[in-house]
Image (cartoon, rainbow, N blue to C red; front, side):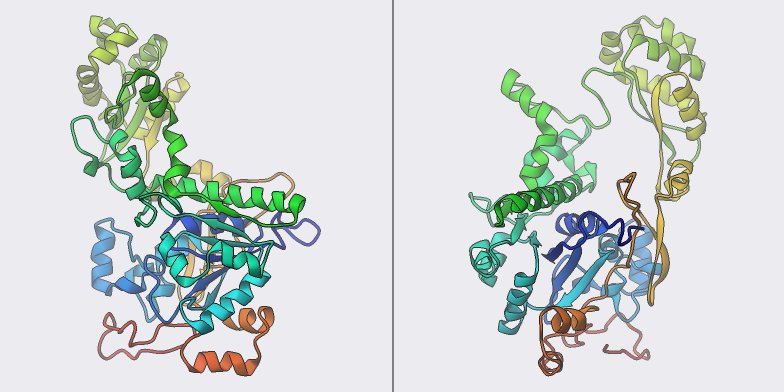
Length: 454
């Protein structure tokens, strides 16, 4: 853990966030992990969609059935929503460690006043809402820079702050569909709807957004003034498709769905192994690698087959080759085959589910997973820090904040509200640590179970 003599690199940087879903919160997750003081600005007077899950609270039975079917939206520890499911929401808690929470509705005059006071105190504001929401709230950069000329504001709409798609709402999966990623990773004999939800664009945007903010902080050291950073979700991910874009611009060739295939390598796919839904990924680039694969599998007949003796031939007869390999790999345990192939110089890797990779000897030896304890929820294992620095040790520091958990220290200590002013906001229901029963009826609780307002 970093200390006063070896502080984290972003110690002293204060960030406000008005973010939803994953891309925006992922940016602040990365920045908070490396020392930034991140304050979530979130209302209790209305539900912030796609944030803490307050708009779709599940009963224990529904949560259990959802978990059994693999649906993680609204997942709770032990499938129990409890009395405060918005604080037990797994998707939210996954990205919110090391942050603080401030209850504030920027659409109300009192909330906007508090938000403007906060803007005076922060270095960075991060948001990933549809542009019209920020415009209606009256908190665009041209307004905020008058309050704090040193402010850096990162804006992450789906498609940009201008253009015909400006106010189209979209998650990572929608963006990936629009720019062609779903098409590319679909299966050749299927359709894009079979690709599932990967949200790759959100993951990339989180890292790119953190890079943009830290770069702007360095620039501010030189100029003394802040600036707005516009990083559309679509445009931050498009460079990842660069080779297909170049192939079209240079050759006029429209790429086709690839699934697990490769343009020139064969075999190149995922193959069944022993057990239910157990698999191994194999990639062969050269004749030598193919011979090594066949040596391990004990299939000299494939090496002797004229169809498979060259890379061109293997690609031309890829379907027949895959079928032959399917019949052989299913007799192996995936990890055993993985190690045998690696030792033989063949690119291969087991396909693991969560239960297996959380016991990965590689990750465990490196101490990647860390435990955090949340009051009322218990101790659970979280993914750790993504990078390790030689001279700056780092670990997860604080658990995800409950809604409004840090109200007093932010309103009174940071923003200068008096105790009387703060208490008035609480009494009027504008600041607090829970949603009212009028806003979120406790329909998921048994009728005999008492509810509580914190």
